[in-house]
Length: 436
Image (cartoon, rainbow, N blue to C red; front, top):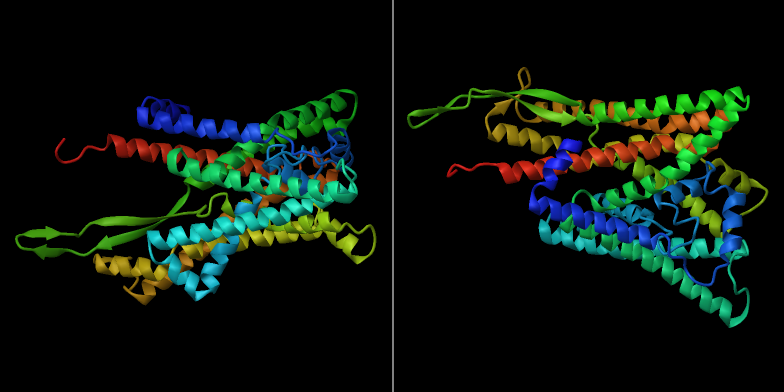
């Protein structure tokens, strides 16, 4: 990886892209420390400590991790990229369910631009909703400086618009990385936010280690165990990213004029981790919706209080839904990206066949079964790695590290995808044509 980055840095074109990406990350971090006006920062800090947003296992703590600590400080980028991710999920689902949007998505570049424009509007709408919810959470917690009269309404409008503007700005920053930088813009911003929280994680490990040295056996063994799990997760994610199922392909011989073409053996590679980190991100974003609703209305007893409590990251309902959503989104992403019928038709047009499988419908059915099995394996790995820290936190009570699995999956997945994009761009620039 380091050698790939070094080689990319030596190419002027790629060096500019890397520097541009780093510049966007710096802008993102600056926006993550600029607080919105009309808030009592001392009361806000105490509120976050009382609710454990910086260290606990709540969904709010996870949102804080993805935003790089901006959520707990109520800064310009407090909403993070969650509204854009939710908007993308909604649009992908609607493109499958609504025929006009499906036709628009198939119109090529023009259709994709229209879909992207609609996604931006939906992102701003979701950012406005989440910003309003966060404002009511701050208002009900006594963090706002104005509590009645015209000043209250004026402060509410300013705070909500600041949160919404931050959402739109983050979306724009991500798109700029896509156009002029390296890697997927939203993924890079997620990566930067999680890396920004690493000092807090290291500090917490140090606190656990200190407690272990003072005689607490539970905490004494926790730090080495967490490090081993951390390294194991990195190895598993790297292994899954590089794993693939190769379907053998045999091309028939054909004579054109005096030359013979075909008669070669090849393979059709299908990656095990087809969706990468997207199923994890999508599932986490969907499960953040109940916590957003809870900001508007936070019951203290009764059915709804128990319902929202079940959506804490150590609640059984959260874990079950998290597991199922990861698998569902993995299959959904595979369905969107791969069409077995189209793949079978392409093989047939190029005189290619799978040994022992007839061309046409039998080939499409065979590829569909392979995709289904591979997606199940990949999604189960992702789900188990994401859930293991949550289960450990629920059984030991050490919830401060409960989001480690998901964070590491995103970190490793984004890093590998970005390095592979660098390698592909370097290969394009070093490719020699027939005139060379």
